[in-house]
Amino acid sequence: MSLPRRDREPRVNLVRRFVRRPGRLAAETAALLTAAVVAFPLYWMVLSAFKPAGEIESAEPRPWTLAPTLDSFRRVFGQQEFGRYFLNSVVVAVAVVVASALIAFLAATAVTRFRFRMRTTLLIMFLVAQMVPVEALTIPLFFTMRDLGQLNTLWSLILPHIAFSLPFAIWMLRGFVKAVPEALEEAAYIDGASRARFLWQILFPLVLPGLVATSVFSFISTWNDFLFAKSFIISDISQSTLPMALLVFYKPDDPDWGGVMAASTVMTIPVLVFFVLVQRRLVSGLGGAVKD
Image (cartoon, rainbow, N blue to C red; front, side, top):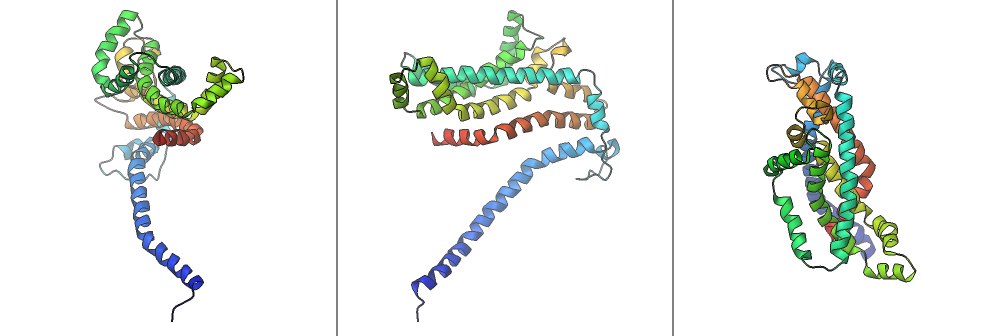
């Protein structure tokens, strides 16, 4: 004797949920394991920053400590130049993020809304620029900065990072600008809006999620840069950035691993704060980029 249809539906849904659950459980388990593997180096860095020197140098390291201490952080903040390094990093990162975002927005609008010769070639050049390793361009950039007289200045760090951030930012923002219908632009012109007003009051807010997404990548790459800071800041240590502070604690004969880990932890905090502040727009920006 068969059950009525309304009585069979709950059982059918229960069976379907039971069948789908193993696959979902496996996916969630894999995601948790991946997250644990990715987060473990960060956990070990923070743990080592709070460990006493004896535990850090122990032949049997343990993933915990029963005697946390702030000695490593005291040594970090006790360095006279540490505050100067931090301020320089903030100046360089903010300058790169703001300048690259504005230039990329204008360039993406130009290559999307206007027709001109060599436009396709220019877009291809943006992609090719992303394929060139940074290490291969360090020496030419060094001579360029030397000829411009910008060695041992923050401009020697700002200008190269803007140049390396622009190709990716322009290519990514091009999709956001293209997604804005041209009918909206025509309607704005009919209502009396100028091109500048449409650009900053209508188009700019619409592509803001994309700007946030590109700004996150440029901020992280600039904040964590060590290669340019080591290559272009040669003698004037007052112009160094925060990654150079790690060298103060790293000595070939007697490295201070607690100081290195504490300084790395302090370096990570601004990145996490910046990411938390923009995470909502970042997700929508990446979603828009994938959709495009």
